[in-house]
Image (cartoon, rainbow, N blue to C red; front, side):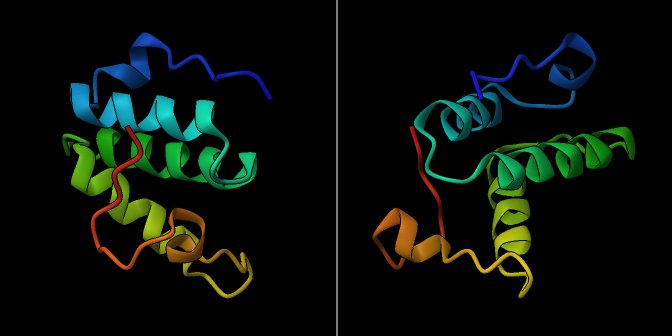
Length: 89
């Protein structure tokens, strides 16, 4: 999958830092495409509910989605550290 285009409707919910993190998740391929798409879908839902999606919220959504047993994704293993703060850029 190529780097996903984030349209203006979605962009308005994100801070610049969150957009940078979102583009990094797509471009660096650290996570499978379905995980990144699920994170973006959930982030846009939060935005539609009136929240500003900042880097911390986007990271929290990523952690929540990756922690679902059905996903089987080990975020700490992929990122190679034990920090609770994800930094991809």
